[in-house]
Length: 150
Image: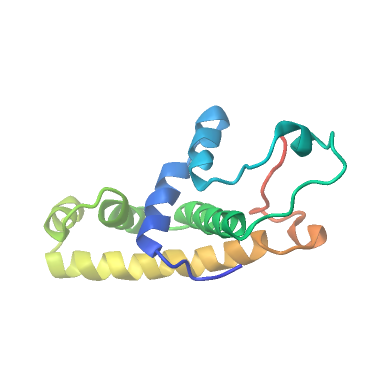
């Protein structure tokens, strides 16, 4: 597992895409990470030996965990910070538009977006560390554990 993500801008944009999604909409968006491979019989355990994860799938799983961590970290940002990050990284707005939306100067908007993105990744790093631990005991009870059932 690696941190920080190689393409921070893409991870932030993907995090906004995952944020608040549930059910089939979430599964559909998760499909873009190419996490699921193999046939259904192997996944259900109908065959004795499941295939080993290939390198591409490990990279995709890691990128998914990074994105999920950033998505959850967005909830920890102040609304003004969340707006600045969303406008710059997800909506791809120019700094003049960001400044207008936030009622500030272009220079302050640039500083705010940069500082908020740094804060976002600080929080996401902690969440990512919790989620990527291999021990069930370390993850159990964590507010960032990945629920497997409703």
